[in-house]
Amino acid sequence: MLTTVQDLGRWGFQARGVPVAGPMDAYAHRLANALVGNHPRAATLEITLVGPELGLDEERMIAVTGADFDMTLNDEPMTMQTPFMAPRGSRLMFGRRLKGARAYLAIEGGIAVPPILGSRATHVTTAMGGLEGRALKSGDQLPMGPPKSPPQGLPEGPAQSPPKGGHYVRADHSGPPRASEYLRTPAKLRILPGPHLDLFPPEALRILQSMPYTIDRASDRMGFRLAGHSLGVTSGDMISDATPMGTLQILPSGLPMLLMADRQTTGGYPQIATVITADLRIAGQMAAGDTVSLSLCSPADAMAALIAQERTLLNLEGLESP
Amino acid sequence: MKRADVRIVPAGDATLLVELGDGIDPVINRRAIRLAGALNTAAIAGVHDIVPTFHSVAVFFEPLRTNVADLVTRIELETGLLADAETEAPSPIQVPVCYGGECGPDLADVASLAGMSPEEVVAAHAAVTYRVFMLGFLPGFAYMGVVDARIAAPRRANPRVRVPKGSVGIAGRQTGIYPLDAPGGWQLIGRTLLEPFDIARPSPFLFKAGDCVQFVPVERTELERLCPFT
Image (cartoon, rainbow over all chains, first blue to last red; front, side, top):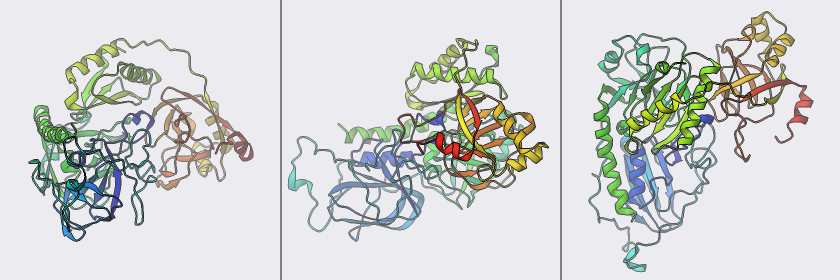
């Protein structure tokens, strides 16, 4: 079980060696925030594989997105991707995981741990951000930011409180489909040629796309080691370059490693390809044992996919923040 | 260097890599640091991180808020304007180091690889004024060079699970100081109590790319006297 506080990441300090961190699935993080009316940069909880049990001291709106879990609020089943008002004293429990690897829980007002270098994102390896720079454990208390004042023109008081014996579900917008439509297995990731492609033999990209890879056990928020077809090449020592999230670097074994949210700022292995930004949400929902295939796309495809995603998010963010 | 030697290549749809040359070369590195500075000053819309390395600059941008064609043009313009003249070297940052023993458990190995005495290795390591080529690996970790070829020991075959904070290591012709307890494969020859990264300080980072660094051999007791703030 790994639950950490994440926001959109610690940008602007990579030149000083500070890893960016942030959500593995930034789409789900933003979606959760939008559903409760938070700013996209508000901190959420990233819940990996096994969900925690959470108690609430104050009535707040909550939304959970990303990986599909069975989830109950005070023993009543709740729907993912749908915001709900959790009354004071509520108990939110995560059960069986159905699909995907990481769920994002946003709470109205955001998680208000102190920002470090401008970000609340947890980076466990360097013990930075989040709650004391570590994953959450039993008994932790999380500070919450102030909830937004009720929208003008809406009645305050009784109309905002949940109906007797439960919660109320906001059904005032169409929203995205209930289960995240991108949690498909085997996963398919679209890639663009990487900056060091010229260091590889001409057939390398074809081999990379020829067969699916399996995510190795030795995989975490820093990156996924991919098991499968070796490119059979070691391009030797390279001078370190910066490493964006989604970089596929080829290890001396000839196998790829996909760099994810907690990656180091620089790396000395050649970068053969990069997963497109729009598909990082798919990568962020993978875990050890999952299979993934890689396929080359055009920069125009990458942009079109990202625009479609952004449109969904901006519509919701616009709706919730006047 | 001629303009033609500059290569701007995408690293995915959200990063451009500007390669200014190849190899570990102070001239190329100076250009990378200057270009990163110029692009930071330019404060280009959509750009949210600029990372100089030994020989390149990575420009991270938000794909839907950046005009990439304009960004490429701007990078080409700034690269063309880079001054090549060497400015006066900054005064070196002095780093007191206790070499060998518990502080530098690999000093003897490095010495035997070099066919030198431990004292000679220390003298060779402390004789050079190093350049900080880049930061990476950990917050505040500075890749410094160039280490005397005679003591340029390769990384350890079996990396340590935990290298203590402040350890001074060698890896090939590079040297560096671990800013945090971390796993690592560098040959540890000494230790300092200076902290390359301390979030509690007004300026948390001791080093930036382009700085000069000198290691000063001291006794353990002297080290504790020199670094009172730890």
